[in-house]
Length: 398
Image (cartoon, rainbow, N blue to C red; front, side, top):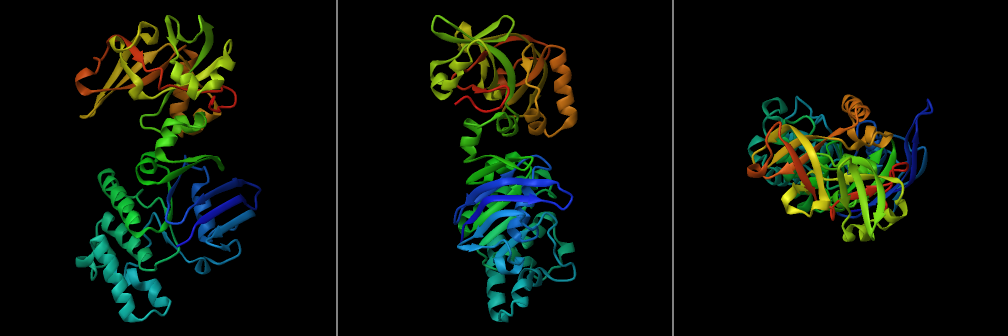
């Protein structure tokens, strides 16, 4: 096996468009790393550069101990799983899985051994003689993965392999791919636009925005310690609630005027996580609150309550309920938020809310404790869990 190393890699197309800027990170030997970001962020371009399907403009790309910038795809010893499966319709499952080995002049006995081994692993033994058209979408994707597995490459590259599947099958295949990678222990770089997919599968996640690497960390670290507003707004489902607020100090306490009539005292432990917040006293910061970090007002002191918010929608999801509430907080309207939302209509709606002096928050409750539609409520804020960012640069105030 081998590691994959991006060292200040850039990609500029002939028309001058730059897709990747100084990309530097490593996929360690046996590691499963997810490249994630909104559409057009450069994640598939980065993957295709590893595969040798896109030329590298500058920088160095290494697989194992070799610089592969000028090597052909065949010379790189990698296997790629595509979004479209790319199966040969006239060949059986067995022939599709063994085709690359046949081209490489591997003996028939060895091809049969590897194909049967992979088919056993993927639950495809009974389908080996079928043609792709006789398979379901999930089975076709397993065949595409089997074709990669039989080659025993140095690394696997996967380009949005689940995007053609329905929601239920995607959930199932996520678990299967993660378990398979853990079993095979092969270096894997996996591209997706679905941040839920990224958070549930990878050892680490690399987040891209407009060709720039924003953060590389474990899913837990990304969620709990986002480096900037873009990562905070992009990672999490539902997304983190973000607003601007003035910061002031009173009797040794740091206070946020989150909205008129709602002054929030910041927990001392939060100041340890965000020490630079004190430097913003007298100014404004971006405040981030995850949906699960709201509670009933009775569960927190009076100085940690967001008051008089109106419930406009309640989504009962079985294990949880999501309450959408109208607040009088100040929305963060920036290029970071536009990119994180990856939805121009949703961003325009946020701008309209901001112009009207408020915005909608999403709050997560247990089903039996959810507020009622149309109710005006006071909501507690767990201020030991909130996040702070510089309004101008978007960077976390750590």
